[in-house]
Length: 380
Ligand code: CP
Figure 1 (cartoon, rainbow, N blue to C red):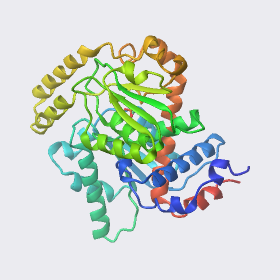
Figure 2: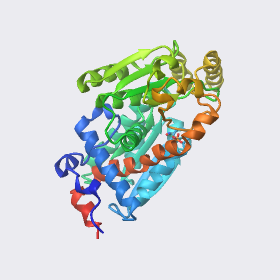
Figure 3: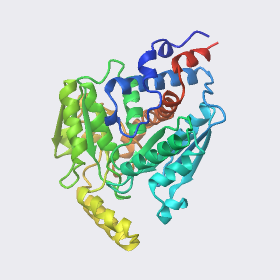
Figure 4: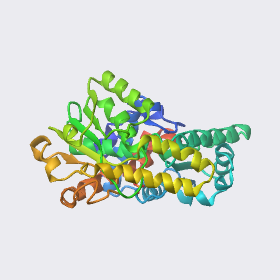
């Protein structure tokens, strides 16, 4: 078998520079770093598609803790770990001693002493998850240094309150697959959409505007009043956009965002002030207050039921045929009409499938010295 072109074209030095790095937010990394990471993800996909096994980290433990539900990211974590020869273990965060007040740093030290990679989802409370992940990583690193343990134990953000990097990088790889010419100059609408199900984290739209703004797109963010995103993420999107020669604008209707769009990404998130109000109630363990705030979030959402990606909205996009994207799960009938979802069912599955290769890349780049040579060695 010949070496797939995705593997031939890897740049060894830029990939070696990712050794020992953890990805908490894409905004922490340079565009060159992210491009190196996604090039390795593309190589992993190409090798997987032709059946080449890549057990780069045999007999190692890939431990993930989820403080929220997940279908795709859990299975992508398990799929990535097993393809690398690691043993995946996935734990419900509410079953750990964090629920009894054990700190993130202490938890990191205790889990990191046994694990060879850590994944964390902590996305429900604004202002907490990202800090928790960084403190947990600090706990792992402190333990490893204090005990002269030379293992690399990278941490992967599997969604926090600020960013969802495995998702947005999967989205970027899917966009590059669908538009091989790239997304420079493409009109991309990231829009709020109505949901009656629950007040969803802000991290997907925040992650999207921070990442896609790096590549010269004409990016439009749309949301109703009160559904603004974190200032730091907005500032990052503006800066990235200016540097990449793209544009970043905020509009107040899905219609305005969809006008002539090449790509639409309509999804729901919670109202900003109420998401902040949850912080105190959560810290106090006040489930009644949490439930009451959730009810107010959904009442507010219900004022905007016309924010649905349907045939009428899609007709406004370029040629009436924009690429529909969603991180999933989507509220079908509320965020998106059944017909639009049906038309793009395979597209959103292909979008989701990139996540396993993104996680493989994050783990392998951080853990495996001379990764390019090692990967080429798997090709017979
Ligand atoms: N998109 C996404 O992260 O899906 P899960 O919540 O199912 O992991």
